[in-house]
Image 1 (spheres, rainbow, N blue to C red):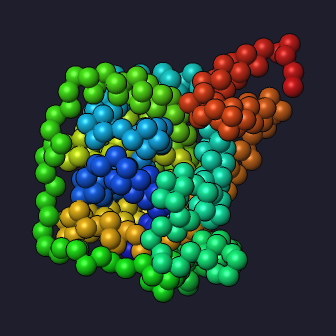
Image 2 (image 1 turned 120 degrees about the vertical axis):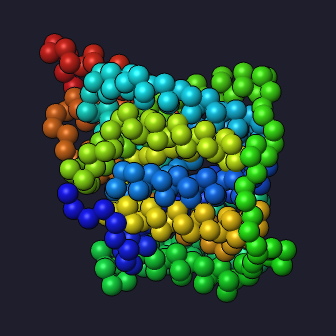
Length: 398
C-alpha cells in the first residue's frame, strides 16, 4: 500500500505548491467581500488535515473558482457567499450519497476528463503569467502589481516581473532537486524578498487564542439563498463535477495507483459537501478539491498525506493564534511568487493528455480547451460531453 504519511522537506515543498491558486482568491474575498479571515483559513486548514488523514494520500483544497471570481467581481455580501457554500454542500452530499455521481462518471468519456485537465492547466498557466506581469484581476483591484510591497519597480521594470522571472529560473533549476526542493526555496525566497522590499507584519497583529465564531454573519435570508442558487451555485456545479470530482479522482489514481483507492467520486463529493457545510458554519468560503491543486502539490514534491497535515496545521494554527490578523502574515508573500507556482502546476496538469490515442480524442480535449478560454470551464465540459458522444459515430471523422 505504501507510505501514508511522511514528513520531510519534499512534503513541505509540495505542501506549499498550491498557494498560487488558494491565496489570491481567499485574500480577495476577504478584502472585497468581507468574509472572515479566521473562518476562511481555519476551515481550509481543517479540510486539509481531515481529508489527508481520511484518504491517506495528498489531497488538494481549493476555493470554488466560479463562485470566487463572480463574488469578487460583483462585490457580493458575505451572506450570499455563505448561502452558496451551504447549497453546494447539500447538492454534493445528495449526488455523493445517492451515487448519482457514479452515473455521471459512466457517461463521461475519458477524452472529456483529459480536456478538463488540459483546460484547467491552461487556465493556471494563464493566471500565473498574469500575476507575474501584474495584470491579474486582484492586482487591478488593488491598483498595484505588488500591493503589499513599498517598492513597485526596479528602474523601468516592474518589481513583480523581476521577482517572477528570478523565481521561475530558480524553479527550473531545482524542480527535480530533493536536496533543495523548488517549492520550499521559492516560497522562502519570496518571503525574504517581500521583507526586503517593504512587506511587514502589521503592528495591530494580536497574538493569542482566537476561536472561530459560529455563523459570524448570522443565518442567510431566503433571498440570499435564492440569489446564490442562480448566480453562483448553478454555474459552479458543472465545473465542480468536471474538475473537482471526475478529473481530480482520475489524476489521483494516476499519481498514487492503489494508494488512492479511497479517492472515489462518491467520497470526493461527500468530502467537499462536509467541508462546505463546515465552512458555512464559521464564515469561510466555498471549498473543493481539484485536479489543478493535486498537480501543483505533486509537481513540487508531495507524495503522501504528510503534506496535508503540514499545510493544514500551518493554516489552522496561524488562524487560531492570529485570528483576523492572519492576513498580516499572508501578505508577506509577493504575488509574482504565487504566479510562478501556478505556471509550473498548470504545465504539469496539461501533460495528462499525452495518453490520448486517437485524433477524435485530441479534438474533444482541444475543443474543451477552446471553449473554456472563450467562455468558461463549465461550458467546455458540457460541450465536450456532447461532442465526445457524437463523435462515437463511425461515419464522422476528424
